[in-house]
Figure 1 (cartoon, rainbow, N blue to C red):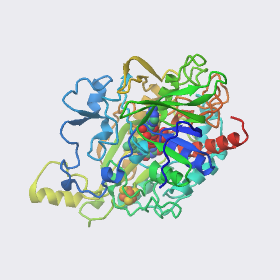
Figure 2: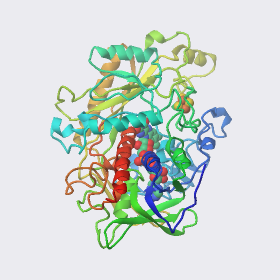
Figure 3: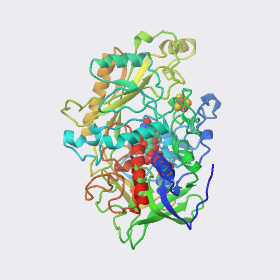
Figure 4: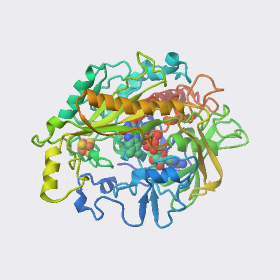
Amino acid sequence: MAEPELDLGKKYDAVIIGSGAAGGMAAHVLTSHGLQVLLLEAGKKLNIEQELRSMEWPYDNAHRGGLPPGSHALNHNEYTIRRPPYGPGFEKSKSLYSYIGSTDYMKNIVVNERDNPYTGTNYAWVRARCLGGKTNIWGRLALRLSDYDFKAKDRDGYGENWPLSYSDIAPYYDKVDLYLGITGVKENLPYLPDSLFQRPTKLNCAEVTLKQGIQKMGRVLTQYRAGVTTDGLKHNKYRSRCYGRGACSRKGGCDIHAAFDSPTGLIYPAMDTGNLTLRTNSVAREITVDPQTGKASGVHFTDSETMKDYTVRGKTVIVAASTLESARLLLLSKSRLYPKGLANSSGHVGHNFCEHIMGPHVAGQATDLVGKPPTLDDGRPGSFYLTRFRNLAEKHPKFIRGYGFEGGSGSGMFPPGTDSPGFGASFKEEIRRNQGSYISMGAFGEVLSRYENFVDLDPVVKDKWGIPALRFHYKFGDNEHHMAADMKETAQEMFEAAGFKIIFVSDRVLTEGWSIHELGTARMGDDPKTSVLNQFQQSHDVKNLFVVDGSAFVSASCQNPTWTIMALCWRSCDYLADQLAKNDL
Ligand SMILES: Cc1cc2nc3c(=O)[nH]c(=O)nc-3n(C[C@H](O)[C@H](O)[C@H](O)COP(=O)(O)OP(=O)(O)OC[C@H]3O[C@@H](n4cnc5c(N)ncnc54)[C@H](O)[C@@H]3O)c2cc1C
Ligand code: SF4
């Protein structure tokens, strides 16, 4: 693989900040247009296969897969009781991680909270600072949005419509499907458009029972739509097809890269064009501006290890540091011309912050499967998705928008129930009898985009590199709490309709941030007074500045965002390349 060195004397066609889903996609699209691109990534390039070790059994790991001594991952209670920054109070742990960093496989991927503090309201902020960002460990549920989302205001009067329609983005969803691979089954649902799917996985017995049980209620359960290649991708030598080895159920990525991750899916192929320069350990701290033209001129960054500062130059700058980090960077890039931060004449940078609410869930048992012969259900990169059903044809009296459920059944790497009381032969017999009969699911719902939910810069607290930390002002509102109560009711009602024995139902809402789907802090729109970007994720204020990650979302939808982030980014980068060729940036 060609790895050109950073050239400080060169003016790159594009400087991209961040190498996750958005930054990787920008690198792929722009290098395929023949542009000379520099990609800056704050984290390290890890030997990722060595980190993930997808085939390792817990008994082969020194800590049974858990964190080594001296490390701690925050749990739900700690997020609830303590206020950020989360470092103080955990002095005994040298390394402190977000809740997702609770395994040995994640410890070098997610950030150490001590080096990367934030302040304000409680928030479980999950960050992965390494090449590929969060795509190394994402859950791979790859869903499209529809005009039920893009034009949601037309349906219920709330918020803003997106400045584009499904027909604008559909060709780009197709491109993403074909380039990266996705598995699933066509359902022809207007509110959850189908992808161009590769070979689907199979539902198991309890899942089919649930699917059939809820059909009479007009509700739809479908195979997990996973951003995983099940047939393989002839054009990509870095990725293998999925062999259904089942390690998807363990937190941590796929070490044969059947599951999409940005390095093997996008960045390495982009490097093969010879047009991409990658610099890791490069923490962007400011987007520089030409005082004569008001345009972005480049990026000022610090080497994360040597602490040395550099400035690189670009004809265009593409911000893709993830929703919250991108907002932070725009706010940090204050100058005489842009005293409120870059691209922020509207005052909307950091605002309209939205995501998904989660927590309510149900667990049950298909009692007719108890005592049946064992099945092998773990060879799948995901189980099922139960699609949105609220506020489609009818209006719910207590809340607007919708939610869907992710769930699964069957025997994974270990059969469920091994944590129940008991020991010895009778315990083993009990586990064997029940294996394959348990089923559970949890909901993800749309959090409304609200101006008063926002992030700004903390005036005092700084990170390890002396950069002001982000401060949260963010809380779920009444709509979300009414929705969460309904999630619990409908989860139970659907399990009952399927004839399952209910074991547990919860309406507990998890801390803000738990869904890891943060969105909306630099939203798109047609009006520069109320939005930051136009429909091509181009700043209204600074023509050669693009923000191509989830910060551009106008609303959160209840569908997971990553496939949409990449489709939008592809569309915007095609536009950027076209405008640059016309000398119009
Ligand atoms: C455990 C888990 C499960 C998930 N499951 C799903 C799912 O099932 N479906 C779904 O759609 N999404 C899921 N997500 C979310 C998904 O990972 C994100 O939507 C996606 O990665 C966002 O891409 P991004 O490029 O915006 O950000 P990231 O992937 O976070 O990449 C941002 C990159 O920018 C870098 N960066 C940040 N600041 C700077 C700076 N100042 N200078 C230079 N570089 C910087 C970071 O180090 C990082 O590498 C999940 C995430 C996690 C962690
Ligand atoms: S099941 Fe497939 S996608 Fe998941 S870890 Fe295994 S090979 Fe990778």
